[in-house]
Length: 409
Image (cartoon, rainbow, N blue to C red):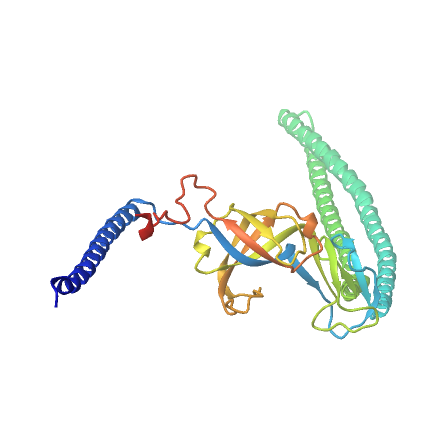
């Protein structure tokens, strides 16, 4: 074999060894480069702020202010007359319907009212008669009081006169005793004067006794007459007619209450959303109609229990319709956060979505109610801006430096 032929295998092997050395060198360089970039990325991740959630997404439903109110009545009773239609706006207390039993209860109320009127008429007549009796008793009282007062005054005058006569007789007796001591008058004249004093004393005693009898009789007669007046007044107050009036008034109250149950009134201001029971139909458990105040609409967002801790009162929200029920994006404000956890009622149309999620209801007051006033219970998409109050929030995704491909070397 020639020398040139012997060197060819070694030349091929050298070529391959060179290529392998270059590949190894490139791989090592690339490994070092990747290690450096990994270290750089780790340093960036340590210094960069952690990602932070800035919105909470949820499904929700539209409802009017005060929720949807189900207006019902006594089950089994039929609707005699329905006075409203779907879409009508009614005021609180406005009559919505009459029940079939309304006419019967109205007749009962009218009968109870007539009974009360009759009882009141009898009471008025008895009151007038009682007043007359009281006046008569008072007249008798006056008839007793006035004459006896005059008689007592006359007797008092007689007593005063006899007292004066007695004083005069006693004075004359003292004078006669002095004259008798001087011998100016006889013993007989002195005895006559003494007898005169005793007579005046007896007359005065009799007059005083008569005065006491008159005053005692007057006091007794006045007490009896006054008792008769009070007795007449008490009998007039406790008359049977008054009892009948009270009973009739209670019967009328019951009749009015029964009548009111046959009149269906609006419990609050609102729009009639749905008529459930028509005229002539019996009221079932579903009620008569549903209504709500659509002038102000709300969204009830079903926020996952894991996200509700991020939601606060006053946060802003955006509401959209995925099925195109309304075109614009609505805005609102979180007004109430529920305190109970429920199973979700609003189901996503995505078959892969969780159909048994645990949620908290969050009420959002809409800024624009007119576009959705007639879309109660519509399913909507809700996004609550939970980071709007923080101007220095962290980015939603941490920055990552891309790793170049080997061709970039």
